Length: 421
Ligand SMILES: NC(=O)c1ccc[n+]([C@@H]2O[C@H](COP(=O)([O-])OP(=O)(O)OC[C@H]3O[C@@H](n4cnc5c(N)ncnc54)[C@H](O)[C@@H]3O)[C@@H](O)[C@H]2O)c1
Ligand SMILES: O=P(O)(O)OC[C@H](O)CO
Image 1: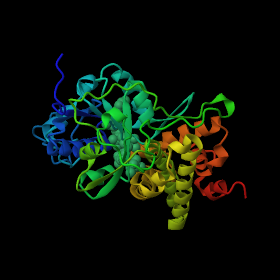
Image 2: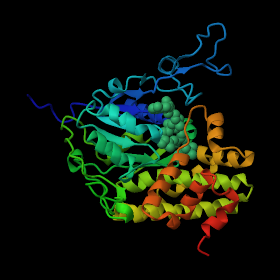
Image 3: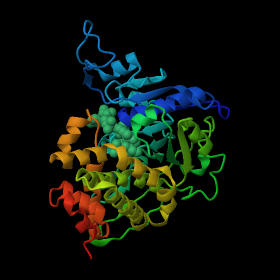
Image 4: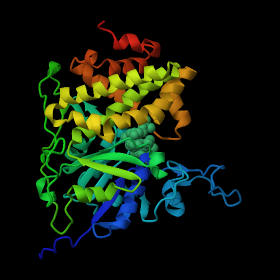
């Protein structure tokens, strides 16, 4: 078979997920595929977990005389060019195609952007096994960690391993609605591609630079638990030379917008952990704010939180993670600040304390189907810390878990953070 000329094909992009952030990233990406037509096919497929949706009476799309009752969300998105349920009020580029068929949505896609609540990713990946092109590359926008019997895993790694592809990560101080409204923000994209993807080397000295991706650091902890897992061990199918290289400059072109500044790094572990762990800290910040304890208390929770994030990374992922990713990048301290100011985890935790109601009840009432990530991440991280006997070394993560479990009250946070004194 004749080989096609280099760069004779374009990358096809599929967004796997269509919630508040999934739809926002689809908008960002679709604006860029239209702008960089030399690299990307213009059409962006967006997989939608299908549901029936009734346009609310206060929506500008509601037409009492012609109301059809509940309709398929995909038909509403494709007809109105708006995700009326998960990103209402934001016009979407017409080159986004909402598709309820996961396998059809990913067909021929060379770039898969994973963006759905973390509790659904394992099942989604199972459905994708054997259905994607073998040389596809992934970017995970998921903020969470996967904890199983065998340890604590990053979604970039678990996706990569389940699908046999390379998967990087995108995370930052990015409240979806603000990004969708094109208010200025920054994000961090970690992408350390296998060398054959990159005709242009990734910048030397970039934190975490390692073409192999992150390396397993701890293998033997108490209890026979393997500890933190990190792959870099997938047998990758090379990206055919007909496609444009996916070096940092081209990956940047997929996500960077004038209102959404992208910084490329190689530290996939740091970027993934920052996004996951800050959700636990945001719950803690919400608890103390709900008590009316003011800004000093919140700042204390945030300071302890960022220290525990770094410690978690260093303890369980060793040299694969760079402290600078937490202290200098949007995915670290900046995401902590934004999440503890206006994020859903913070807001729901605060309401839960103020109203004396379980946070799950508040989530159900306030979020219209959107999902909190901090509550399940707090449980998952705690189950991992317990297995490895290190709960006490992460007093804030542990305190948030104990409060969610009803074993302690938010008022006890100072004592829980000072347990050894
Ligand atoms: N929303 C934000 O501001 C924001 C910003 C940055 C990162 N994130 C992260 O992005 C990820 C995705 O969050 P989001 O805001 O797009 O989601 P979301 O909170 O809006 O969740 C709703 C989505 O979950 C889907 N869903 C429901 N049940 C499902 C099922 N059984 N299987 C598959 N999908 C199902 C819904 O169809 C919908 O698309 C999360 O990890 C989150 O932490 C969110
Ligand atoms: O609304 P949250 O708490 O899920 O946080 C949203 C984003 O992750 C903020 O960067």
